[in-house]
Length: 197
Image 1 (cartoon, helix red, strand yellow):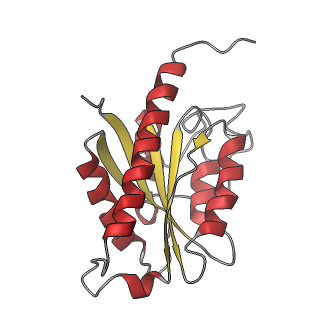
Image 2 (image 1 turned 60 degrees about the vertical axis):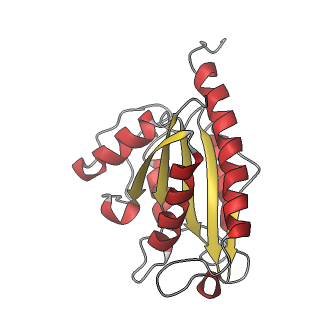
């Protein structure tokens, strides 16, 4: 039987009229059907994310005084075994909202498996994903190679948020979730082993 792990799925866009919640709902259904995860969703539009950061980076002060409206987000990512970001591409990069969410934390990301579901007009969010891979590498998290991408997403979903042709994205999601689960299982075990200094 597949071990059930805690998966946090984060909607990263906070833009007015954003499409992110539609993609998140679709992916959350895929993750729930996978059978290997207990899934929690987080919407950054509902998180207090000031861009003004504490004087000491979380690397040196892992538990800074954070806004009360960030407490649930911090708890969920801290307890998660794996995290999937639903991320759009803005100007060939990722939204500032997810960078702020990342920078308010450090230990919560470390040793976690990270996956991506991207969407945008042309690239399907791949440039945003590639940028985030570099960021998470610095945080000692592991980003899985597999991803899900929706180029020209506005042509792929109908007015009810359903995919016109769901088979290929569903297969990509299943493959990514398998890899996220494998890595999360390995990393969860590894986090219990003290790091040699």
